[in-house]
Image (cartoon, rainbow over all chains, first blue to last red; front, side, top):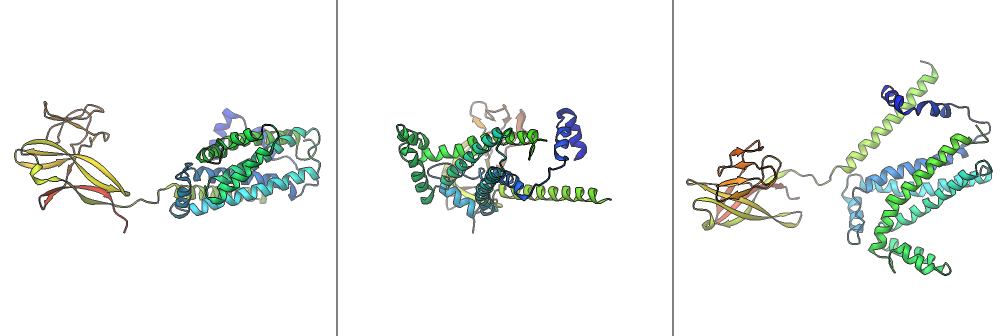
Length: 215
Length: 153
C-alpha cells in the first residue's frame, strides 16, 4: 500500500505538502469543540457513500418512487440499514454543522484573514439545508408531499417575484412528478458536487491559514 | 516496536478493517436479492398438427416471467423424419439468427455466423452449434422446454 502510493506520488507530489500539514504541532488551547467540523465532514462522507448505494435502487418517478423505497426497506439486502444510516447521518450532519458554526462564531474564528472561509462555510450550511429539504421529498409519501408543498410555498411570500420563484422551484404550479425529478437532480447531482467544491476550498484555506491564528 | 510505531500500525489496521467492512456491506447491498436457481419449464407452443412435415418452421411460445407475459421464438425442424427444436440464440454472442429459406441456412445478423438446419456451424465466428431445446407432445399440444428462474414457493 505504502509502496504503491509512493509510486503514484512520484507523479502527483501530494505527499510532502500534506505531511507538513498533518504532522505539524497543534496550537495551544484546542478542545474537542474543534472536532465538530471534522464530525460534520465525516457525516458528509457517510451520506455520500450511502447515497451512492441508495441511488442503485431508488427510482425518481411519480409512479415508482414510493414503491422503490418500500423495496429498499423490505427486499434489498441490508436496504433498511443503508437507508437508515443515510437518514440518521443527515440528521447528524445538520446538528454537527450547526454546532461547528456556533463554535466558529464563539471563538471568533470568522475574523480576518479567515472571513472568506466563514463565507464558504455559510454557503455550505445553506446547501446542507437544501440537501435535507430536497431529500425529504424523495420518499414520495404523504409527509414528504405536504412538507414540500408547505416549504416551497414559503418562497411565494417573497415580494414581487415570489410566486414565480415558487413555480421555478416546483417545476410547475403544484408539487408534482416534475418537482420530484427536479429535487432528485438537486439532491444527487447539483448539491453534492457544489458542496464538494466548497469543502475543498474550506479545507484548503484551513491548511493555508491554520486552525487558530496563522500557521 | 516503540509506542509510536505500534499506534501507527494499529490505526492503519483499524482503518483498513473498517474500509473492508464498508466494501463488504456495499457489495452485499448491491448484489440482487432475487437470484434463484433456474429450472426446466415446458411452455405451450403449438398444435401437434402444425409441426413441420419437412424443413424448418418458425414458431413462438409464451411464458410468464416476473408476472409478465413474454414471447420467445423457436425453430422447429423436421430433418429427414427426425423432429427437433432449435433455439434461435446464436452461440457466438447471443443475437437471434434468422432462417433463410432460399439457401436453407440460419444466418446471424450480427456477425454473419451460418448454421445448417441441423444447427451445426457452417461458417463464421460461432464456437458451437445452435442449442437443441427439449420438447414434448401432450394431448395434441407441443411444449418447448426452457430454463426459467424457479417460481418462488
